[in-house]
Image (cartoon, rainbow, N blue to C red; front, side):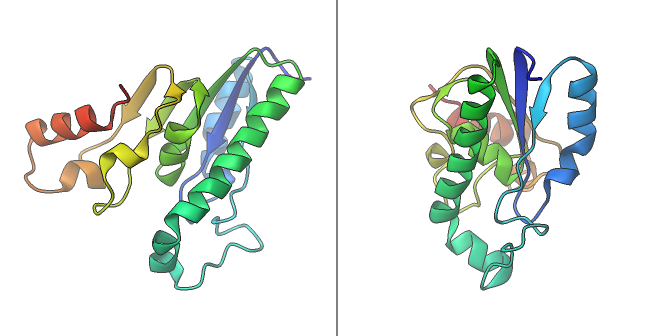
Length: 164
């Protein structure tokens, strides 16, 4: 049975849907229907080995991101077809990038989800991706530890990443 409130959890690069199991369990206890798809760049996916390893996966970033977006869209469509009225998106690391790009009006939580340094921050978001977004990043996250290590730098980076 699909509840009217639902969430799609999207794991990071070379991670697994199981990495977000604690989020899923808590959300279900609070009355949400939760989907956590296994992305094809997961260490658990049968085709998850990327030629060139981590570097190879970064080089194939755009093609892989389109596949991730399609999986996410399929999840949202399935939830809505089965009665979900409100669908939220939560992504960690590369999953944060994925949820930030899906077009539509969603409540989004982006946990340390940013593109690698050579990518323009504008590429993290698409114009049609609307709705409120909570961006979470800690002092040890890459976005916060790039020089110059300052709050001004972090705030400037987040301002550039915000849709709008």
